[in-house]
Image (cartoon, rainbow, N blue to C red):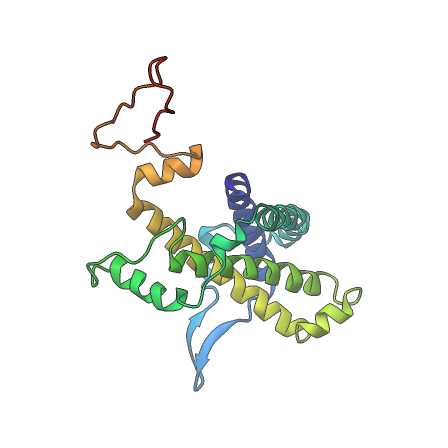
Amino acid sequence: MRWTHWVNFPLLTIMIWSGLLIYWANDVYSITLFGHTYVKFFPRWFYKALDIPAHLAKGMAYHFLFMWFFALNGLIYVIYTVVSGSWRELLPQRKSFIEAWQVLLYDLHIRKMQPPQNKYNAAQRIAYTAIIVMGFGSVLTGLAIYKPVQFATLTWLCGGYHLARIIHFILTIGYVFFFLIHITQVILAGWKNFWSVISGFEVIRSNKPMKIVPTASPENDEKPKED
């Protein structure tokens, strides 16, 4: 799970970067109400800062190549999660949405008592499950855009080429927000938590005194008690 997590980071970064190169050629999306545009995706300074203009062919080449690695890495993660039974710790439960609100209040220092925390708390269950669903959505809508004739049925299921492209774009924005929140949470959790994601273990020092239980002797055939 850690390997797929770390492999996915550079893959998703390349996918977003190359997707921006493609989107530059036809950047039609904006938030407009009553004839006034409040947000334009994206302003010209944004393209210039990232050196995006005039690299459409490069963006398509990178995007269409690395999408296979992105899909394969996601497939490996899902298969392992199902086979190992880890999905039980990831899927949201009935009370997860209520507890997720409590997690938010605790992170904002509004609530003092920490909500129940197992391997993943309620907010993490929802977020990590959502990101898997988003990954599937990106692959399906991406294929619908990539080959709208060959995958005509898939394109139709996505609501047509234009709607598939909108969904694909919204999912990309969702990845960016998830990434920003994820990094913020990692920083707040501290260096030890971050290192445990790299190494696979975390050293926890305890002040609890160790109890030494003597082993069995020839005079005493009783089995030693386990602590």
